[in-house]
Length: 398
Image: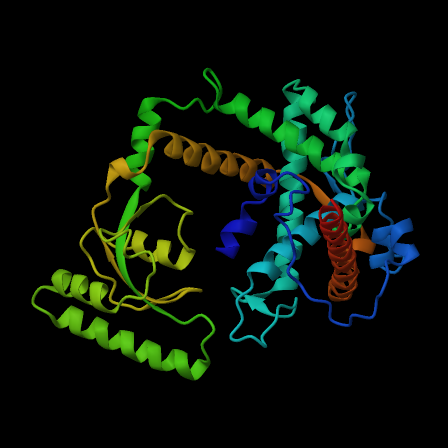
C-alpha cells in the first residue's frame, strides 16, 4: 500500500487539496522540548528546520534547467514547496505506520521494502515534485493558462492556510502557490489529453480491452497478525500452513478452500463479500495483488502470502465484470495511463538539486519538524477547548 501511495507521485498530491488535513502526521515529538513556536521558525521555517543551511524561498531543485518561459515557468522548485511535499509524505507514512507492537514507533531509520524510510521519503518527494514540474511545463507548452479557480485559490491562500498551518507543513505562501499552480496545470493537461479528440481519448473499445486485461478476482483465507509478536506470528504462520497443506491434499481443493475460508478466515469483509473480491490494479495491497496476478483462474497459490494485515491463502476466481462500473473503470484507466505518461516524460527530464539540500541530515530535520508540529497541535487543541468552554458558558448564561 505504501509503495503505491508514494509511487503515485503527482496523482497522490493532486488528489488532496493542499491543506485539508489529509496529511495529518500522527507523529510524536522525540524530545518535546519546545513549549512555544520559536521566533526563528516564524521568521523562516525552512531555515529553522535546516539550522540556516537553506531558506524557504531559495531554489533547491530544478527541472530541465529551470528555464523560465514568458508565462513564467515552473522549473525552479523553492524549498518551501520541497519541504511541504516532504513533510506531507512523512506525515502520511507516520500515520499509517504499523509496528510490531505499541512500543514500535515510526522513525526514518526503520525500513520498508529493503530501504530506510529516510531514503524512501527522499526518492518519492523528488519524483513527485519532478512530475509536478513536468506537468506544468507540458501544460504551458500546450498554451494552457492558469484557471480562474486556481487564481482565486492562490489569492485566498493567506486566509485558507494561516501561519500555524503553514509552519506545520514547513511551507510558505510561495510554496503553496507553486503547488497550487502545478495542480491546476496538471488537471487541465490531464483533461486535454483524455478528452474527445485528445491524444489519449477513451473509447468504448479502449475500456473493453482494459476491463478484459485488468479486472481480477480472488477469494482468500486471512489470519491477522497486526500487533502480534514474532513468536505469535510464527504460530499463526504454522497454523495457516496446516490449512494450506490440507487444502492442496484434498481431492477437491476448491471446495476445501471454501470450507476453510468460511470457518477459519479472520477477514472482516467476508460477510459482505462471500463470493470473493473483484478489483482493479492498485485497489489491494501489493502482495495480495501480485499473488493474484500470477495465478490462473481456479488456481490456488501454493505459497502463503504475507501482507501488512497478516497471512493469506489465495485462490483466483473468475471476476464479476459487472462489479466494476464504466465510470470507475474509466477513472482507473485514465489515472494509470496518465501516470505512465508522466513517468515517461520524467525519464527524459534533466533534474538537479543543490548541494545544500543533498548535504542535509533529514533525520535531524524530521525531529525538529515533529517537535514543532507537536507545539502547533497543542496550541490548536487549547484554542479549540477554550472556544468550546466559551460556547458552553454562553449557552448556560442564556
